[in-house]
Length: 248
Picture (tube, rainbow, N blue to C red):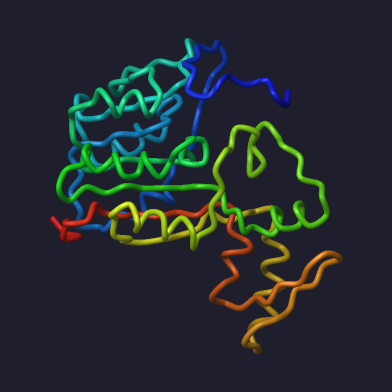
């Protein structure tokens, strides 16, 4: 139900299962020679993604930490150390440092993500990495909804009612770099609902530099270099704390 959610930063206990997906797309952004011995996931839900990373890097239980505002009483947190906490509260109290910190669909829910990105440095080892995924504000669905006035919030997805910050690839990159991180790699989570139109455009681009996509409300000049900006569902970034050398 729209409008039926907790106050910002309020801790919750729920009886339903609260789960996330394994993010192989984020994992693929990490350099193959990078050694990960400790990991923190902010907004871990049931920990499915955290456990996926933990098992991939063979990380010890005591070095696998997950935090979330929402604690499901139907979930078991047996494979990692769980803190029922807001991100802001955790960062004030935590003294441990990590090789990898995951922000999987988190920054868009935080009131001050810029402060969070700056403060996270104190919780990272010298070569530490962060992995980020956020909804892509430049997706054609967003543009279309704004242009025709039919911007309606939903329970999940691009129009999630609990999203309070919005990013494009360009702005997220700028904010991450301004927060004293070096971009290591970038990627996109595809929007499967737009794949048909995307394929049509790619076919048209086979013999052209760019094409104009026209709708009732707007037109876009699309080429092979910017097509993901309009068709990507999520922006993915791997970045390193400045001062690291990118290798271990």
